[in-house]
Length: 343
Picture 1 (spheres, one colour):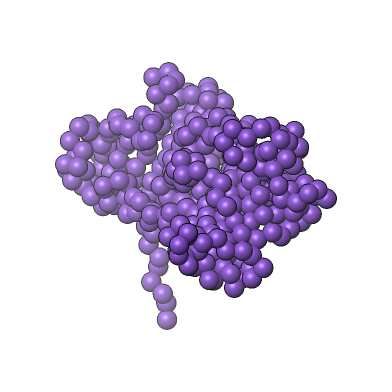
Picture 2 (cartoon, rainbow, N blue to C red; picture 1 turned 90 degrees about the horizontal axis):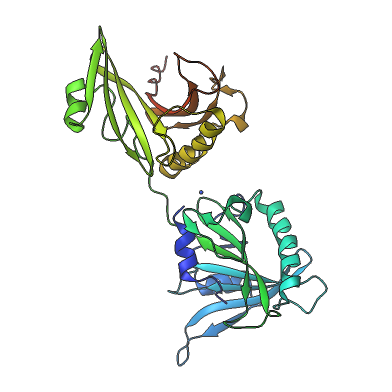
């Protein structure tokens, strides 16, 4: 039973389950059909006509009080998707129902999955798009982990089927392996300790200025869909920090915002940085302190890379410190070297 189309998978897989990561229940991605049959011997195998090769494996079971039809899909001999069809508790079993019944059942199943995986990464209340793509009309919720997506949706039993043939489906889909974190050792192509001349050679469109032992190299560019002003900071001729200011090209041509606008833009920027560096090392949900020290006001997230700390925060302009003059800044700083171990 494979109920989620490849176009939906393509829509979702480009992006961060909270529990049960790596597959479905006891099964993990990449298992063979024989391995899954060992876990669930009560199931039934479907065969490719004219061969003895199985393509999927189904079983009828229960999830909490709900009857459940589980389909394991093996498109190339390896487990690549699991689709679960829910039935009404006390009903005829895991079968399609009327749309009205499916909507009510979908609410109950979402509650069950939330108790298992936590708050969804996406619901219709978040808008019509998920990960930059238009979500299917009957998609109800989605949960994410480093290696699995769970998509809850309503789906017609077949093309052109009547309104009383709607299934409540939770599909489990593997995500591709996450690439290693980028920008370690500096920012983009730079590394800590570079000179002004070395950074300008990398970015010939940048401008520079200096005062005493302090110097700056600045350039206006893009990061994903946002405009950014990048400032490379030098002390005694060596690169010691990078600040990146963000602005939404759909808004006014400035890097300064009122708090509500700045907070909304901060959410977008955090999404960009999470796609690059993974889950933050610290967020305000972790408490008011970072490494035993009080977090700066309006800190949004921190990523800790092998030799670089990245801090995202809202920052007031020094010349006009008020709620109407906030900037969104991602600051890159070298991680202090660990002291040599003593004897």
